[in-house]
Image 1 (cartoon, each protein chain N blue to C red):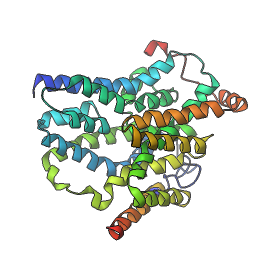
Image 2 (image 1 turned 45 degrees about the vertical axis):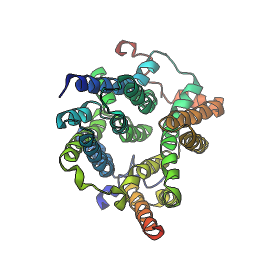
Image 3 (image 1 turned 120 degrees about the vertical axis):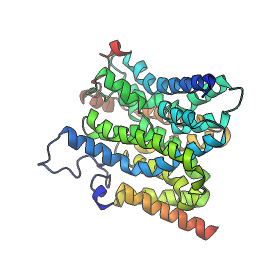
Amino acid sequence: MSLESLLLIFALAAVTYATRFGGHAILARFGALHPRVEAGLDAVPGAVIAALVAPGIYSQGFPGIVAAGVAVLACFRFSMISSITISLAVLVGMRALLG
Amino acid sequence: MADLRETMPSGSHGPDLQGRGPTKPDTTKSEFMDGLRECLPVLGAVVPFGAVFGAIAVDKGLQPAEIILMSALVYAGASQYVAMELWATPFPYVTMIVSVFAVNFRHILYSASIGRKLHRFSPLQKSIAFFGLVDPQWAVAEKRAASRDLTVAFYAGMAVPLYCVWVVSTAFGVMFGRLIENPAAFGLDFLLPIYFLTLLMGFRSRPRWLPVVIVSASVGTLFHVTVGPPWHVAFGAGAGILLAAIICKQEDAGKQEGTGKQEGIGKQEGET
């Protein structure tokens, strides 16, 4: 193991940890939050996950979009694991059919 | 799988109160087991993800010890893949560090959001918890915190196995990388997006959920197509968060203030 690659790995680890601790550290400097900031933070999970997964689904093309639609509908009825299984089965089936 | 079902979200109320009879005490052990159950569906995605990373890194010429050290210390799948894309001699230090920061930028939002709910954690426990704040860990913790206090035991019940499996599956990929030739054949390449999609559905009772999701998904996809990754996450999420801040009504805000959501912030200057 070279010293250089070791340094690089430590640097990447430090940058990653900084982002994971940083948001909280910045926020903790402020006292009470403005209601709009609070509303924005409450929207973080939905906003981030939507931005994260939408392009991935879109880039899968038609089978991906159908499988995602099936997963969304399945969530109203079934457990998480069942929904994922159903959705993946639809995806694999469609890929097989569409070649 | 049947025994998992009762703890998984099956309706708009999430997994929170299901599978916990009134006689079951709220012990550290049951909290830990709840966390452990939450991490099971993720492991199916983590194992190939970690193993493929190990295999790619071997291809790039990294030594086994370096690869495993990277998974153990950086512990961030997507940015480790990016680092492998950029791995070359001499090391492009600045490019790699900036790219890893960009890919991990979303963690700043995770940290800001979940940090408000860690009031049961000591400063040291918080520091360790933030190290393990990977995407599924954060999403599951948020969902848990929406219905009850987030405990150290619950967090650890998910974080510890997730971390161990990540490092072990990396090592597995280093040793047997060639065995995973075509994860697409089983739809495994799509497991992570679908997993996050179902998590997203679990948040649907939150205020302003639908408009936020529509805006973030559209802007995220637009940036993914035009500018390219990883900026779609920051801009897509930013658009949705901004929208939520703009359309939030004053009475909503008043209600939120009354629920004590702000506990745990404002008195922690000493830790930062």
